[in-house]
Image: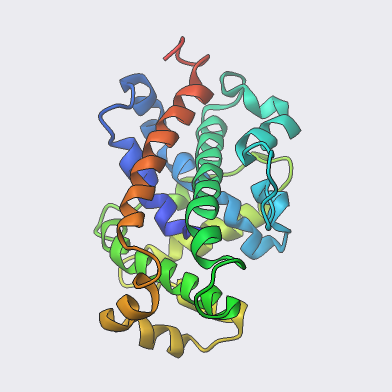
Length: 255
């Protein structure tokens, strides 16, 4: 699934998108710290230790005929489906959270399962998991300059206050600070270290591959067409914009 930094990159693009209604843009910009943080928040499981379903509302392997995870979350917690009844910062956070679930759902179905999942036929499954992490780390290298160029998302300004009924605020603060520190000028991004720790592989092995465009082409993009990344992002932006409109419709009188 995309890294938190990819989700932040998409959130910034959404906030600047010309199709976004001005009333919605003004609301999300006013509450941008909460909105940006919400776009990363499902990955709080990294520090909370929760199972995937507890924060993402879907599990692997995927099952057919299942509702998408953002709809599952709102069915489990119908009070969260009415942003007009929530504090503005919480509503902005929640729309970010739902957008993250939509991005992960699309990524799993269109990228992970067909190209890196158990039924794919190139390399071994453990090797594909490693190369999937290489792909995500490589994307981070491409997008991070736009997030650390002096106009960083001010995640530390988000102040959770019982925003989620299924995650303790303590873990949200830990996750917020973990990400915010990495976005500071000159800070080291820890994507590779997190992936390496999960797979029991040395970070040096990751960095050696990531430093070689030729190896990335031969070992990743030879099997996963590079153009799928652009196609994925464009389709995701379109779906995210629709989800924003659907979720905030009552707040902004039928946008």
